[in-house]
Image (cartoon, rainbow, N blue to C red):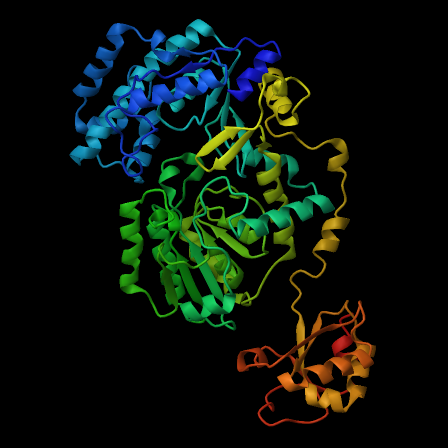
Length: 612
């Protein structure tokens, strides 16, 4: 309504049409989330009338375009269908069953609609009746009004899908709106439903080769870090915030020196049956089973299967019961090197991303988020980043194991600067270029909102950049995602190069001993002469608590506390920390450390310093 009011202020003729209780089922109420009450339509109409009155919006009901006998005809048609016809039912040229399919899947949170079950057949028949009613009314509306542009919500579910299909069939330009990828952000999509991946593919075609600027890098890195803690989300937070990696490893029985692959399942009932999100595998479970068998044959690595929390947990929106049972049944025959995390377990998916060297992903945004960390990604289904050069997209399931084979050589902490560079570019486009920040409507919760303006003057041209952009998209045909300018296309990579300069380089660790450094300051002076802050090496000083103050004095005396000084860490090193040490910096051989080699004294530090 905010957008439509602004269009009227720009001279457009606007017709706002609302439903007046025409449907026996619609997407305001889904059985597994919020079952439909008897007074659903009356309550909905009352709420809508109050809202449009408060916003001073003119409207009329969709029912004015429905003839009296058409409701009876829709019921006759739907009731006459045999159960085995429900999933393919058409009315003339209208592919009604296909257009309402997504709503029925969401109603039950099921990937497949089993009409052999009477309760499912009843709901499917109800949606088919409602779909034909929508066809009758919306087809007549489009014929009589003949709009230049059709502003439509969602475009995926029941009557909104009907509206999208009928408008496209008449050659009417449709702009679909939905919530964006961030809080208080709007997504506008041209001639596609809200679930289409085409806007993101187009964004990547336009922007994939354009380097990010320093402010853009800072913005996207900060945003991605915030997502790990539930900040700036457009919807509910389904996973716990990040947790200490050692705690997660201990809970799952993982070792830091063994490569870990993380497989992230998806609660994909919203995308099931959608071509953009399809997979070459017959099902998600088949893909998981194939992966388990591959890992069974490669005991040198560990696999963690993270069942998506939205499949069914205290954080989820309802539950996909069948999928949940399928995932839990995987426990029955897991090899020793495979762990399965139940949706209810409060283990952060982001901590798993940090632990894993490889991410195996279905349709989740995890694919992009993990790639932004520089990790190797294999996609088994349609995804925002499917087909991009910084992930591996499975096209032929018969070659799946061959595709995984090279990843066996990756170290446990393997990362790629190239992967991170491109993934951050995509992420910036996904979260900041495609969507339109829309502060005029404040999201108080993921499901509720309030106006952030107090008069129509705030919607006049030039008063709000986001609203001006929406108006240009609707009235002037501006692209929903603006392509780069000539100047942006000529950007160099220097800023990205500097940002990524040290990414992926493993820091070497040399072990020293506080008591020896305190007694022999010449060792610290030698280290200060050999290294500074530019070097990828850390001096780990094994320090008893009683030695701390004297060590600080020695470090200061050796000028190692300067701003550009080398990296020093003082701690009481445990066995796990000692296992990561590359070298010993000492004049003596100590009991229990004979396995570490080579040893360096102040006369041979050039061997460690050679990297600079």
